[in-house]
Length: 409
Image 1 (tube, rainbow, N blue to C red):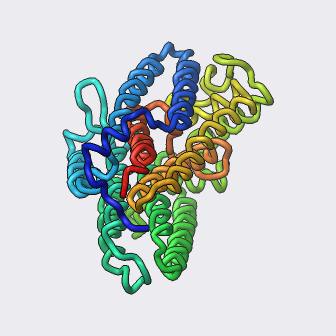
Image 2 (tube, rainbow, N blue to C red):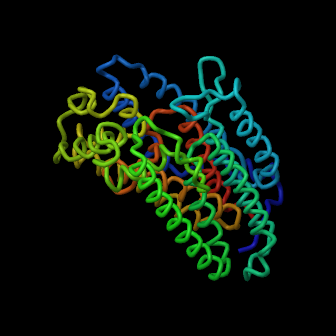
């Protein structure tokens, strides 16, 4: 599929603004946002929290960003992708500097701007999407031998922000990038040998992490150290770039009783109770006992574990409604990627869709005990300003691909 640039930008803009909008995704986004506001309110009701008001404000601002990005011909991003990437790398470096970055719960991920906090990794995800699509569109993709140049550029473009994000440390933002990039490489028809090699590398890394985690467990038990209080001791003896609290999360998934059933394993246990106790129709809005009584910790109930609150209070029916709305967003993203008449539009729509798929799958799987706790939020529902704004920006790109899809010759 060859890149086709618009002949006349002015005429394209006029043609594209005649009301030709895809309404399925914004309707689903509005529904998900409403769920988020309602259940953030419910999760914070015992402490009279005002997070739902802030979330409403971010959603309104995000709606403006969504419309603005939708009105911009997505081809413009092809020309400014490198500049956008460079600008987004600046705060990603600044956040690591003491005095500029704000440390919360042991991670230095935020830059405070007045009363609000900005998370640079969210903008970095958009930058990686744009730079990856730009590099793939501007390069010839064939065999691995032919594609070594673009693969080297991609490794650098994706590797730099990933390393900076891991330095914060912020594992959740780092792990969502590879699936997005690999999906874009796949539709670019890269040689199957590359993906076979990537799979082998993934299995090797997984094996090394598993071996390192086992050695960590043996180290802690052999020396009589506590998993709760003696943190950071094993890091000095390992060359695997993981923190001990991250190893604890892996171990808590495998054997929560051994590590910390009242601490790191507590959240997932209480989440399972929340989801399981909802039944068919739930206990009723604001009537969930897990979050109200504090069993599901109030620090995470309104963000990482918001789906658990929904499942308890609205049961299976409420959960299916949320999943259906996400399914609509994801299916529509794939549909728009197929409708695009150029590679850049296809790559953007597909990359955004896979990014959302990873967030939805990992977050919900985390709440029901299928994967270790990573802190990945649920799009449009979990509390968080930077994340909401980045989600709206990304979906605005998909809407732009739809709106400008036919104005090419």
